Length: 263
Length: 332
Image (tube, rainbow over all chains, first blue to last red; front, side, top):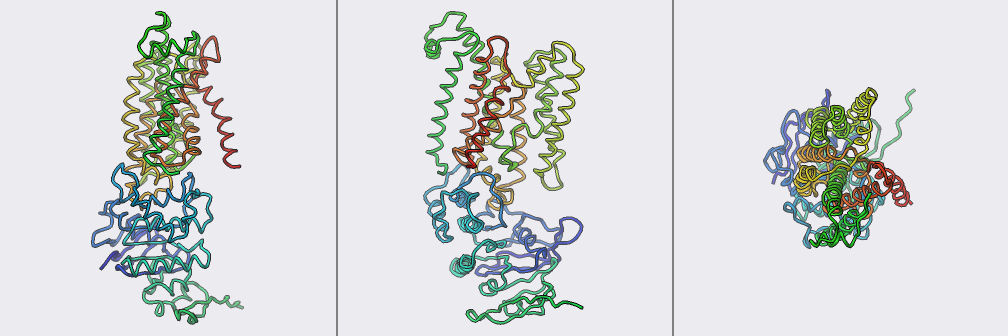
């Protein structure tokens, strides 16, 4: 079942196009990884397909309806986003922030009930932040805060999960755990998920498909074996690299090489 | 501790008791001291004061206390809303230039020799509304209202009006200058029930609408994008709340003058104690802001035996050091 579809989407902030003629389809039960160098348009892509930015050309459909025609509250019941880190200027506790994931499901003036509290605690347990529930967001480490924000997104009980570098602040084990959790949710819960990641090896290991984006254009999309090839990655990242297979998972593994000194 | 209906009611009840106590105390303090027990009896409908005392209580002091409460409530609630919308803990309700516009209007009214209410208040209110319109027009981008532009526009407009106010003060040479300064620092000396009837509806309607948006304010305080992803119609909510709150604050400024610090420190103090959930913070600010300004106005009456001290002087003198204490304690 098609969840999210971008058709010939182009977007620019000012004069230059940041996204050029992008086509993309995400189905339920699929986990996609979005990779590409800094400034290639990954975050902009996420903002366009989530309806925060409106493309000048083409259209974005969520469940077969133009995303801009969705009521934002209805959309928030189905789509959740983990953005890159936002500063917390005001004292909110972890539990308060995770419970905000339940807001889209509440009626006007309704308070979070036992049901909502149970969901919040469950997702906090999954992300291992339950012991931090009464701490202030501003007091947490980057990784703990990031996990709390993922817990909030999961509390929305979305069918579509978008994450912008969710593993950026996480340690090794939590990076792995987050990918495993996301994959399990996609497999068992029928979620569709799109994850931006700079960790190509992890993305290759867990994602059904990878999308390589460079200067606003999709270079190649497909299973990791077809995307993670030196001929695709070297020109995009501007460095030489070796691709072999992970001895454990058997999925492609990238090792960048230092640039040769030109004489 | 998160905001549950039970906690909101309990906190509000406690703050309401404080407000009532401050009101009663405040009824007794002034150039003519009234006995607290006599005041209490009068409140319960039993006449215990002499005719003169009753006139002072019901005609002079009560309107002054009630108006102070209304203004304090509006400024504190306004501060909460602006701080959340602009995601700036240093924002105060005058930050969009409302005080400058209203002050300029008021001074023109004073220089024309009009009565404080409704004459001076009316021009002050128009001045405040004009400023809001100006700011909203200036900050309007092609798609959305930029909070940074909004803040800068407010600073510029306030600077412009301050200069205009200084100009008017410079060319005024007579006794009216005293009235001008009193107005600028905020003063409840000549309050009547007419001002209360004017201001009350603004607080009532404004607060109900703001409280209905409390959950959206929680999200906006974290970030506009977060709010959007969690279902808030960000641009609509932001614009409505900015205009609504500014109009409410303009109405307060035009009957009280420019009383600083209330809108800055009350939200801060309460956030330190109660957290940031606006469903709790808004009613608490309303009640505590009212108590605080009534208390400061009581001090203004108690400090000087002759003449009047503008209440804005007291709020700044009390508020400043207390604020620094809280900030330091919070950090350590």
